[in-house]
Image 1: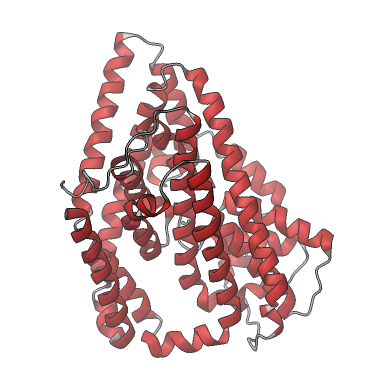
Image 2 (image 1 turned 30 degrees about the horizontal axis):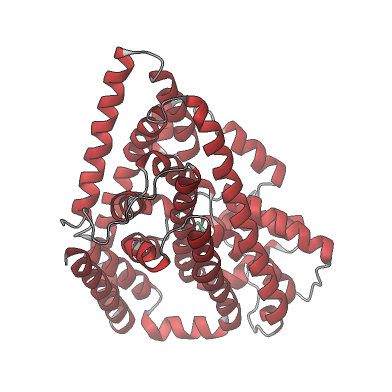
Length: 419
Ligand code: ASP
C-alpha cells in the first residue's frame, strides 16, 4: 500500500537522520540543506493555502451566520484543551520537582529574550491590533497569520453576497486551494529525505549523540516531566476527546496524521506543518474541508496545547531551581499566563521560549532563568509542536462532528499518496 510505503520511508528517514546526525555530526550538518529545501517548499505554500482555504471555507458555509457557532465552539475547544494541558504540566512539575535536583548554573540569557519582554496587557493589545492587517502584502510577506485569517474570512464572507461576480472569484480560490494541495501531495514524497536531513542537521549542530546526551542528562528530570506531560496530553487526553467528542477511531485517525506529526517534530513549526496537517485531516481522515479549512489555520496560530504545558512546567522548574516557592495564587497566575502566552506564540520554532518570559514576569521570576532550559529547548520544541498539531487535528474531528455532519468513512488509505 502506498500509505504504508510512505510511512515506512518517513520512518527510515527519521532513523537515518538520527544515526547520521548522532554518529557523524559533520555529515549531518552537511546534509542539512536538504531539510531546508523541504522546509522552504512547505513554507512557501502556507500563505496561499491559508488564504485560499479560508476564503473557500467561509464561502462554502452557505450562510456566513453559520460561522458564529463554529467559531465559538472552536475557540472554546482551543481554550479548554489548552487549560487541561497546563493543569497536567503544573501537576507533574509540582509532584516531581525537577528544579530541586538540577545542577545547572544560570547564565545570562540571550539578548533577544530580555530586550523587552512584553507584558500580558501589551501582548493582548498587540494581538488585537495585529488582527487587522494594515498592508495585505506586508502581512503576506511576513507570514502574519492572524491578520491574513481575519482578512480572508471577511473577504470570503463578502464574496458570497456578490452573486455571479463573487462566485467567479470563489471559483478562482477553489482552484488555488486545489493547486496548493496538489503540491502538498507531491511534497509528501520528498518528506522522508527532508525530515531525515532536518533531524540529522539539528543533531549534528548539537554535536551528535556525544554532545546531546550530556545536555539531556543534566536537564533530564525537567525534560522527562515535559515529555511525560506531553505524552499524557497527546496519548491519553486528546485521544479520549477524539473518541468521545469526535467519534473517531483513535488508531486510524492518528495513523493518518503520521506525516503531519513527524513533519511537526522535524520542523518545530505548526505553521510550516499546516499543509501536511490539512492533507492528513481532509484527504486521509475524510473530515470536511469546510470545517478543517477554518479550524486548522486558526489552530496552527493560536491553539498550542504542547506549548502551554511546556511554559507552565518551565516556569515552575525555574522557580524551583531558584528556590522560590510559588503559592496557590501564583500557580493560578502561571496557569493563566501560560495559557495566554501559548496563544500569543507564533507557530514557528522557539516561539514558546520567547513568550515564556511573560509567565516569568507575572510571578516575578528572574528572566535569566530561561538560560537554564535553553540547551534542551530545541528538542522539547519539536515534541511540543507535534502535540500542538495533534490538538488541531483532533479539534477538526470534534468540530466536524458537532456540525452534525454524517460520519464520513475514514480513508484507510490515502488519496494523497496516490491510492
Ligand atoms: N514551535 C511551536 C509551534 O510551532 C511553538 C513553540 O512552542 O515554540 O507550534
